[in-house]
Length: 485
Ligand SMILES: O=C(O)C1=C[C@@H](OP(=O)(O)O)[C@@H](O)[C@H](O)C1
Ligand SMILES: C=C(OP(=O)(O)O)C(=O)O
Image 1: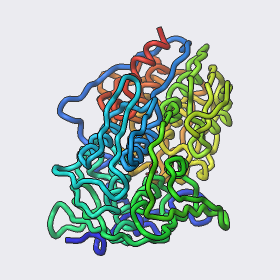
Image 2 (image 1 turned 90 degrees about the horizontal axis):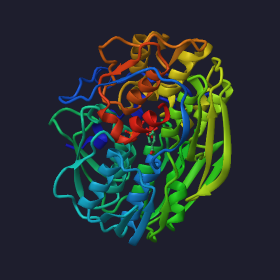
Image 3 (image 1 turned 45 degrees about the vertical axis):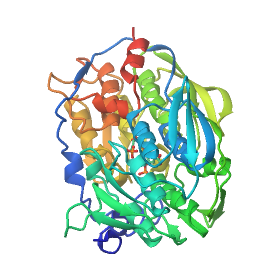
Image 4 (image 1 turned 180 degrees about the vertical axis):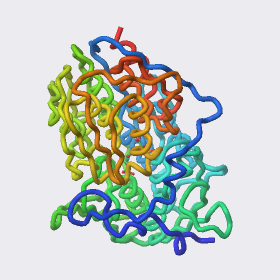
């Protein structure tokens, strides 16, 4: 059964963009909301209590950027020859991408501190013999669906309970237009979730596609499909999203250009095109740095330097908002690493105050809202967020999960359909939780955010499962521990 024609992709369910601007309109429904809001604990959870601590002091380096790491592996696997990647994030999400690229013919090996990728060339991917297990990773799934859409091969995608509840219609829709076909896992039941099987187009047709939801994953999926598609494919972004694919594709030699037309970004890629192998240096992940920036801001007398933090303007919204709340952040040794702006961030404790967060900033800090909510819970006054429907379809329903978890820890939180309104304590530690762990719903960012809430609480916070943290930030708890001794 082909889903391309009959599924009700979430991109169609939303009449207009979910985030920011005059085109903003409420989505009508979230089919997966219930699942994402109520995910059960896995069989083997790793609970952990995060106790209150004194000042955080010291210098740390956070692991490589997750978005850039996925792309470095994928583009390297498409180039002819050997690419070398320094600073690759060795998190489970990125390793899922590496495993999938190996299943499709690339050689990927760790050589000391460097990862070496020997690519197969655009158009030469092998059909995977077994299902591609994407684990918890939306980025791996959606980008690789795009990649396969431009190759005449089939693949089955599977994932964990969280990923299997996330909407894939947003990529099925444009990739279907390019000629790919999708088969539901349960016959007779149109659906846009994993597990699903797809067949790439041969040949694929170029499209012009205006993103109905601000998503770098959807944009990147289309660009990947376009790499092996004759002609010009255009992606139009009404609201800019992270631009790592564009930057890196240019570096790999793809024929790609970006132009702003009537305040929209038009990204044009001319295919088919060969990629030339590259040496890539992955900067530190601002999404990971954000946990420590918030921790240092809210724990009195803290003074933490986070080295080598990526500050791409499409990613740095969290630091702008923290500064607007009164955070003390110094940007030291600004430089460029691997074509991305980078600095060392020195963050000292400061008295934060509540703000109204501009929804137009949301795409540049989409993964940082859970930890921003923690900062808001300790700030003086009210923090209001809106336009955040997308948070309901991440690894968990991040509005519902954070509202529940912060409330359990003693914060005052009002959950609205598109955001949270938080009345902060003005710096008084949160009460914390009893022994029953706060539910993290298979979501690494909830687990890390509530760990930060724990160290800034009176009684500590019990996190029900820290296992998912390894998807994006292996070593998180040790780094935190090291700063607070
Ligand atoms: O392209 C990427 O690497 C990502 C894009 C974002 O997702 P959306 O494209 O769904 O906004 C983000 O939440 C995710 O962690 C990584
Ligand atoms: C949303 C995230 O990742 P993904 O979509 O790749 O699962 C995230 O890392 O917060």
